[in-house]
Image (cartoon, rainbow, N blue to C red; front, side):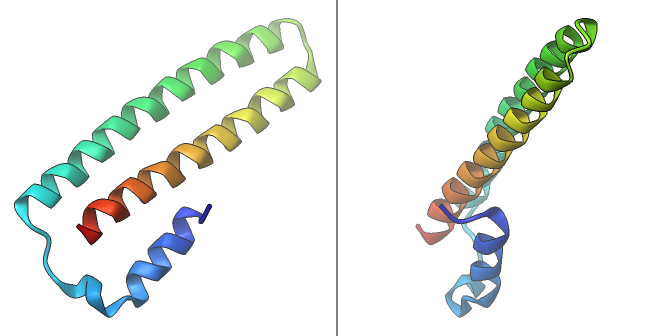
Length: 91
């Protein structure tokens, strides 16, 4: 799976991407952003709850695990978002 950076660089270098987006595409892209912002916010809330529990127990291993899982899940969601947006752009 490509990272968000790699997808952005492909779009930047793709001369076919110079065509303007339709209103329907813009609306679909905005909806994708809203959907993933909500999912990312949910992920942040879950992380804070788990971090609070791990800090209360003073468990450094759990704190690190929560952070690693959060970063992995966040990266996965960002990659999913970029893939969905790319599909809309391509038509």
